Amino acid sequence: MSIRAVYPGSFDPVTNGHIDLIQRSSALFDQVVVAILRNTEKVPLFSVEERTEMLEEATRGLKNVSVTSFAGLLVDYVEQLKASVIIRGIRAVSDYEYELQMALMNRRLSNRVETVFMLPAESYSFLSSKLVKEIAALGGAIHGFVPADVESRLSRKFHLK
Ligand code: PNS
Image 1 (spheres, rainbow, N blue to C red):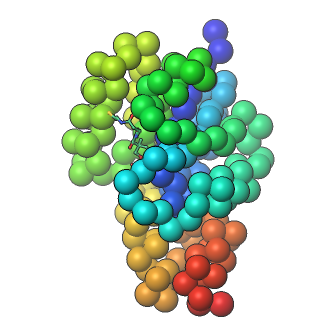
Image 2 (cartoon, helix red, strand yellow):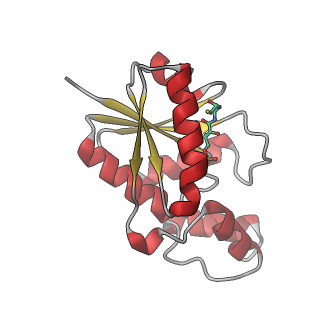
């Protein structure tokens, strides 16, 4: 049986923590579809097209990983892709409450879809897209938090280079 997993998120922008999780998932599942949420209420820093480019660049070496975007309910998209797993990363206990609520709600919406929680390397447990953007906007060093391509895109966004 071939298992297709969907890794959904905002990825605004992708961090090395996300990439660590994609690599771990790619070793565990037959196919991994990274799914960027389109209809977010938050105003993103990067467009869906820019986020897709950054994720494609970062996952180029992983043959069973593809990058897409979606709008609407996640479980509908997962079923549309004929996938059976949603991957979510848990960095710390603080993530757990929100993730548990979302996983149980998604299970209520579709009992054909299972959520799998994965842990990124502990060195990324403090990392988030939000903090990376804040640090970059204030001129701080983000080297090692995001891929080099994302680092230069952030510098350009904030006119630091
Ligand atoms: O990276 P994020 O912002 O934490 O990802 C959140 C995401 C995209 C997984 C979540 O907002 C989502 O699934 N949105 C799609 C709409 C949906 O299905 N909502 C019901 C969730 S129980």
